[in-house]
Amino acid sequence: MDTLQEILGQEIPRPSVITGIPLEPAQDLAPAQKIARNMEIYYRNPWAMVEDGCIYTLEETNILNPIKPLPNHPWLKEVANQWLSEPLLAVFKSRRMIITWTMVFLHLWLAMFREGAAIFLVSDKEEKSDELVKRVAFIYNHIPDDMVLKPEGKYTYCNFKFPGLNSRIQGVAQGADQLRQFSATAILCDEFAFWERARETFMASKPTIDGGGKITLISSPREGFFKELCFDLVR
Image (tube, rainbow, N blue to C red; front, side, top):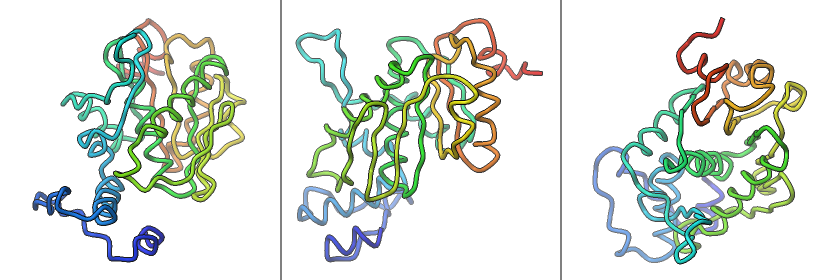
């Protein structure tokens, strides 16, 4: 945060909103002060970005209004809180729960606000993993510039990088060999229940948790390894 303070030329306000003490209303602050206030809050509390209307999603089936704010549902906030506190999280989802968008945002937040983050978005096929990375780029591009001091980010196929932070988000396909060679800060596995190599991918990723990282598994319900993980039936 020292770099942000140097850029803004002033002390960064402490996040008293986190402790329950009201902050000075954002509308009463100068633009630079508002951004500094937001950055300090968002650094510790990603869901505050949703509450402030900074995070947008794309609903391609909605012809009239496809770009919408990520909804501030209490149950989505609870999922985000669980993700923050737990190294291993498995979540059943359905199409209208917006779980994938929520998790993509949280992993983007981790890369934006933590230097040296190595984050992997995994699907059964590489092109599907690239679709997840494209969601990262969409969310990043639609964060309002007057709310957040965004680090420079660049999208290429299956990659989104923050060169100034040495952080990256990479899309990879399922398989033990895909992740075994990397050290990961966080791994997100989408539609995990439908993977042919779900078990071997998870076992190869397990050292990530042991080293202090995160693994998040999200999927529509299906019998198999994902259900066994969710109900602690793995032997």
